[in-house]
Length: 226
Image 1 (cartoon, helix red, strand yellow):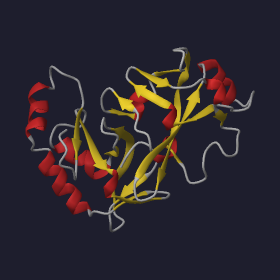
Image 2 (cartoon, one colour; image 1 turned 60 degrees about the vertical axis):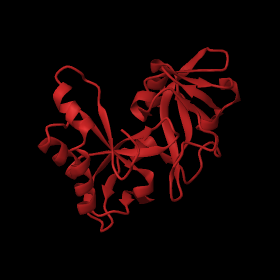
Image 3 (cartoon, one colour; image 1 turned 180 degrees about the vertical axis):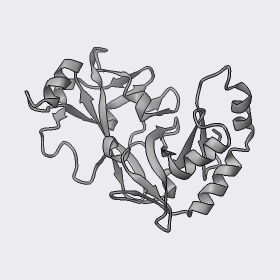
């Protein structure tokens, strides 16, 4: 499950919330704004599609109270050359479509701002939590960071609520509509999570969390290292 057809260069794995804090710079190195929202497509796998560029705070305020049209630039993920402390584009902002263009965002695309409001249910329709973010790994894979419900209960029981992100790969998602449906049961998820929280890396988090504040990513249903 990959970011896009042309995988961008990532300095490290990161999530959408981190990406939204970064400045976006054009091909000349000029700051053109920051990421306001993102879109994804889902057809058996979750794929990163587009960024919606947000302008200065005052401009956003005017848009929010309807004093001017909401005309934020939209750009395809393939235009990103790399992401480190900034999001680097291979073009200028003048070439982008905007949110006012009818074909800028496809009908089937899912906005991150909507995805974060969705409940997650297991293969039997039982609610197990919600989507709290999306994770991008350096190999180009896209996964869901999950929280609430069962996930939060397990982390609280382990004393790790604020120290660990639980990541579910896109291959475990069966569909996305008004909710996110997984192809595994609540029991399978619980067992897999309990096993993952016994790993050596998670034990290190318990030992060092008083000193280090960095969040550890625990990937479920995957043999890839954390």
